[in-house]
Each structure stands twice: as C-alpha cells, then as structure tokens.
Image (cartoon, rainbow, N blue to C red; front, side, top):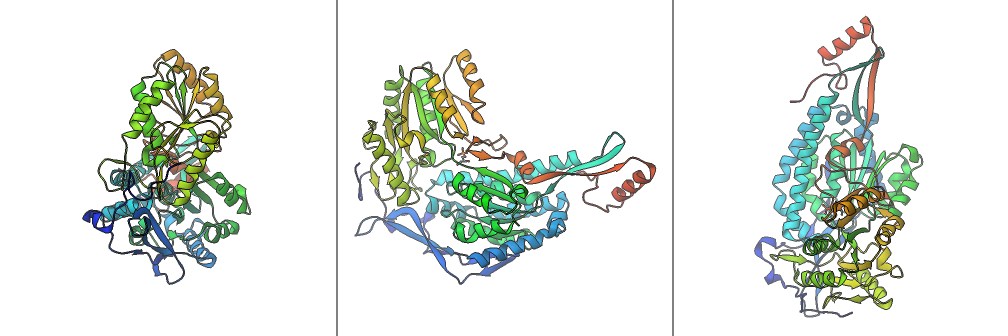
Length: 542
Ligand code: G3H
C-alpha cells in the first residue's frame, strides 16, 4: 500500500490557507459542565481534542490541536445522575408533571436559541469530525427540523389523547407518560443529529436526561449548554463528559437509569445493559453495527447503480451506519460496473472539509485509517486487488477510497463493518448467493436492490423484508426521511426511531380509569372543568 506523506492528493494546508470564514482562533477550551441547572466551571482534568485535519509542518503533517474538554470522574457522573433523579423526583418533579403544552413551550425556546449558534456549531463539526461544510450544515439544519417535527408530532399525539374512551362500563383517559432518567449517547459520525434524535424526544416526553457526547465530536456540544440551562428547569438536562468506563458504567450499576439510548457497538451496549441490576426495568433503544449490501441485478441501470453505490459507500467517507458496505454485482455486469465505479470514484475530490466540491475528507484519527489499511491488506493477501488507481493510499489521516475485487468469505472485509472508504465488490450468478449473504449476516439493518424487472424485484423484496428493516429499490440505503421508521433486526438495533416512533420509545402508555357511575362522572367532569390535573384533561392544543 502506498503512503503519501505530504502532497499528492492529500495536500494538507498551513494556517494561511484556511479560509477566513472557517478559521478557529486558538484552541477551544470547554471548561464548563451542566449539572442541576448550573453551568459549573471545570478545573479538573481535561482531554485534548485533535482535529482530523492535519496541518503542514516542517516535520510533516500533524493533526491540529482543536481544544480541550472536561474529563469528569465517577463522583462527578454520580452527581449529575443525582441531579437528573432529583429533577424527575419519581415522576413528581416540575418537568414530568408539566403539561404537554408547557413542555413544548420550553422546547420552542430552545430551538430558537439554536439559530444563534448555527455557524459556530457547523464550523466545529467540520473541524472536529472532518465533515464537509454542506454536510455539517445539513446535519445542523436536519436537527433543527427534527426538533420542530417532534413538537408537531407531540401536538398530534396530545390531541388524540385529549379525550375519554368508554368501553364495557369503564371510562378511561389514555396518555403517554415519561419513563424516568434517560441516558443518551450518540455516535461520532452524527454527533449532533443522532444525539439529539434521542435527547429531544426523551426530554419532550417528560424524562430527565443525562447526555454524553461520543469520544470524537464533543466540543460542538458546548455552544448548546447555555441554551439548555436557560430553556429547561434545573436538573432536566445534565452533561457527562469523559471516558465511558468512568462516567457511564457506574451510573448503569446504580439501577437509576431508566432508559439507555445508545448508538455504537453491540459489545459496549451489552456491557452497559449487563451493569444494570434490574435489566427488566431498563428500556433500551440502540443503533448498532450494520453491513448493508447492495444487490445489483443483471438488468440494473448501470449509471444509476454506480451513482447510488458511490453515494451509499462513500458519503462522509463511508462513515455512516447506513452506508453500503458490500456490493454484490451480477457476473454479466461486473466488468462494466467496476469500470464505471472506478471512473466515478476517481472523479471524487479529496480535500479539506471547507473546500468546495470535496467528497473525501480526513478520518477522525490514525486508528481508523489503520483499520482500513488492515482490511485492504488482508483482502489483497487472499486474492483481491485494488481496482482503482491510487486506491488505499494513506496520507496521515487521509485514506483514499479503495475498490476491492473479487471479495469472498475468506476476507475480513466480507464480514466486518469497515465504517470507512473501502468498497468491497463480490460477483454472483445465482441470486441465492447474495440473499444467503444477507440471511447469514449477523446484521439486519437495510439492503439496496438494483434492477428493472418488476417480477424479479417483487419476488426479491418478499424474503428480504424479513431479513432487514428497509429494502431500498434502485436507491442507496439511508436513515431519512426522519418520518420513516429507522430500525434493524438481529445485531443491528433495538427499538424503532422516527419522529413519531421516538416519542413512543421514550414513554409508556398510562391510563386513568373509573367505572361509569353518576358520582365518578361528576368527579371527572369537575377535575376537567377546574383544571385540577394535567393528565385528566381535554385541553386541545391548536
Ligand atoms: O450513521 C447512521 C445514520 O443514522 C445514517 O443516517 O442515512 O441519513 O446518513 P443517513
């Protein structure tokens, strides 16, 4: 595998080459933690954050120092948990007993505050995780839209619940109530969006929250802390910054976490769940590994299959849980497909996140690059070749996309989730081969099929929908639109997310019921008329 130490496709900049708009003035020192409604100054140990972006130096490219954030310890984490437990107060706290209308009001205030920090957060996303400017801006805007859509979905849910149901002589009002304390942890590839797709529904349903950003993608959360403090009652939102073993495991062991919302590896998810002393009391919503396959049939539109495969495999350097991580191509088509795929991949510009038209950016750290190299070397040793010129070239944190062919079951990349810009291609003659791959895979998130025969596609969809949770026709795999369910079978997920599903995940159906008789009818009517309860209420949010 070739190395590119400085120039070539990976020309890292010096300070003067960073456009004004994207410059950072010195390291971003985040020395505050949000606990119990207070933004406390942190003078304990800090962790240094290095950018995926390297700077040119006389000694060669070096990852730029971006900033520092608090490394909270066990006692700090337990204190944050205590604040969340107190704010929930067994469901008697101000937040869990507040009306839906009032909670939506707090959320509205929060989303308004987000506007002012958009550019700062987008810039940090670019520097911290190497996302291109358009993708970082999209992540921010998609998150703000998600919050607004969540408020709308809750209004709808509340309207349906603002009535009584009478059956078999019982009158009941059925609403969704909060679960307690939710621990929310997002991944580094969507550190803002995926953390917030947990945090926001958890909050708006009346839970109190601890949120821990991923190890990479922390600094961008600091501009939100004041808005969290000002928009929600004390203790409703608390931060955890630090190593998982220090700040997360001890919390799980207390049994006081009621909801675990986590995106990451199944190994970590399992170890966290095992810490909980009464696992049956823990609600989990998990996004885990995936190895989504594309199946390209012999009558596929080649141009479309190639462009969707490139998008699917290489958007944000392939660092998406929904990325296409293996391409199965019919043998009659494979040569032409590889030729077009090579041309399309070669046309992608490698560069810095701020450069216009850039497609491949540096990866968060050297470890991730090393892993891609290992996968490629293993495949080469077992008979695959890198099809595209320059594929797999390494330059500090850069890894240029590598198309590997022919890939087979002896190779690690056939089984492992590369989460990077390696594109394994395998060919098939009998459709049973890729279908069997999907069946035998421990993962079950999504699949893409490319073809044009309605009969063939129709017959293929039926077995696949029982293997994965989304079958994409002539389209790459993806999470969005956020109103669609996002879930997975087997080792890929637990629980379903979407704007409306997430409201259900973070709540439980609860009923107030009474036998219908004159005394009870009068009592309930009085409660409603005098607004004695937030739960027993027919108030309708317009
Ligand atoms: O990393 C997994 C994300 O949920 C993928 O979202 O398909 O919209 O990029 P996306």
